[in-house]
Image (cartoon, rainbow, N blue to C red; front, side, top):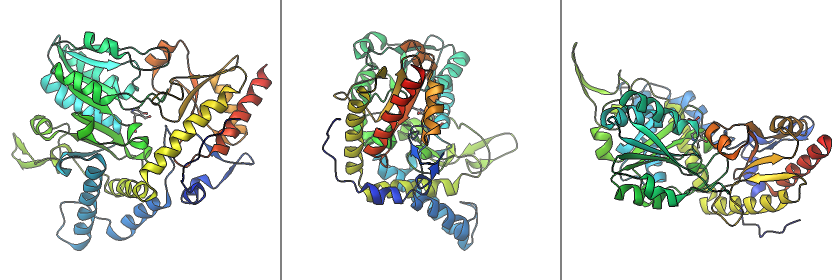
Length: 414
Ligand code: PLP
């Protein structure tokens, strides 16, 4: 078995902060390896939600009473926390949305609807989640714009050699993931952004998997929009963030109309509120915002560098350990390449759904399917994969249990 230097994250105490991890499933301690779908929440987030609803619950930006003031303050303080996390120049550039999906739909519909013309090109990649494909397809259908895509090489890395060829004077935006939810590939966003900008195109980064595992500095990344979801970083479901450069957001029309997003309303027409409220129609998910900020604060307190070092070590350990499993292939980058601890697995002669079912009987939760990346599955020539995805709380012993269970699955189907 491989030996890897283990970084100094106190995993026992970290795991104690996650109530959902303290349970047996099918008679065995739960091994939760589906954090790329949604992460478990630390107690600090659950307590922040509870405290909000028990003490501060009121609608925001409306009331002139104590609870409404507290709710508004907590909601806006959460925005400041997110701006700090992203190193955004201003909290006014941080727009609350339901999640990555809504953030990308907002940009595609609002910026795309206002700026794309017939024949313009939107550049995506074959690695993208459906959330970073379908919104662009919808706006392309409406405007006559065309989608083009960057391919991957045999190890699931973007073919950057194709980029310069695909970036033309018709390319208006490049929409790319920070990290792949299916293969774990980390994309060189800065390099892509530099080349896109040189060609006159904007860059949107789908940060659903990036925000959970990588340092995010929107200024250093050089992107124009960054989207992520609260539930993938240990925050609540139903809250997420769109960050965009102020001048772009300022110039974009509203995405949805309603309360909160207006300055003045006449019967026939209206004017819009300042950023970011222009994009926040209706009662927002205030508790969600507070919970998301609590998650970001939690990871700050744990130490993001220690978390990243742990996840890097896990990725190397898992790739080594899984190599010992007969008939198993791990799709995607190897341990020397930029990748997260997400493993798409193909086991000879065993359907991914059967793998997931067998592992579930052993208390191990993984995902099987196309992972909302059907074009990628087609490109890889597989209908589906079994995906094991780690987070800061994943242990080396859990990787061992995964490997042992996969060996057993191989023997059952042999
Ligand atoms: N993009 C990527 C890379 C993802 O992994 C996901 C979720 O799995 C999404 C987008 C969509 O996120 P959400 O469902 O939270 O909107």
